[in-house]
Image (tube, rainbow, N blue to C red):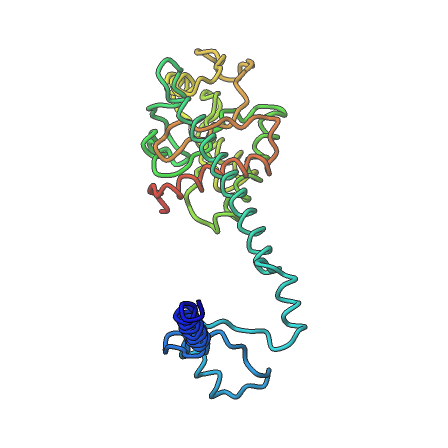
Length: 303
C-alpha cells in the first residue's frame, strides 16, 4: 500500500512544482515591457512639474501628433477666455453692423424696384401714354422738339403768364426744386425744367422771357401756334380750354392741369408731382429716379 502511494505523491509533487514555476514565470511577464508599450508610457506620463524646461517641452511636442495650442499663461487669462466663449464684443458688433447693412440694402432695393414697376406700368399696353413728339419754339424763337428733351431728366409744367396765383406758386416751387437737384448732383447739367404755355396768343417768346426770369434762369420757356400748343397738351394729357380765335385785348379764361411731369432720358413718363408735394419731397423723388438710372449704368447727357 505504501509503495503504491509513492508514485502518486511524486506526480503530485511534480505538478505542484510545475504550477509554482508557471505562476512565477507569469508574474514576471508584465515586468518585461516592449518598445511599443514603453513609447505609450512616455507619451502619457504627466510632466513632473509646471516649470519644465523649454528643451523638455520641445521634446514632448516632438512625440505628440496633436496641433499646437496657445495656453493661457495665468489662471486669470484662462478664466477670461472661458468667460467670453466663442464670441467677443468685436464679433457681436460686426454681426450687428452686417445685419443693419443688409436690412438697409434690401429696403433701398425694394423701393427701387417699386419705382421701376410704377414707371413700367405707365408704359404698359392699354394705358394712355404721357408725352410724345411735339414741335414748339423756345425763348429765342428756335424750334424745340421732344427730341431735345432726350438724354436728360426733364421736368415739364404747363401754365400761362396771366395766371393770378397758382402758376406763380408752382413756379416758386419749381425754382426751389431746381436748386435742390443741382446741389445734390453737384451742378451736373442732367435736369431740364420746362415751362410750356397754355396761352399761345398772349405768351410770346419775349413775354415768357420776362416772366420766367423772375423765378429761375434755368427754366426753359416754350410756346408756339395754337395748334402746336393744343397738340402738346394732348400728348401730355393736359386739360386745355383756351379758345382758338382770340382778338387782341380780349379777355378770356384759361384752365389747365396743375402737375409737374417727370420724364426720363428716353422721354418716357416717370411720375407726377402735384400740389401736395413740397420742394423737399419732390426733389427726393427726382433724385431717386436719377440715381436709379445711374445705378443701372444708362447714359446721361451732361452738355
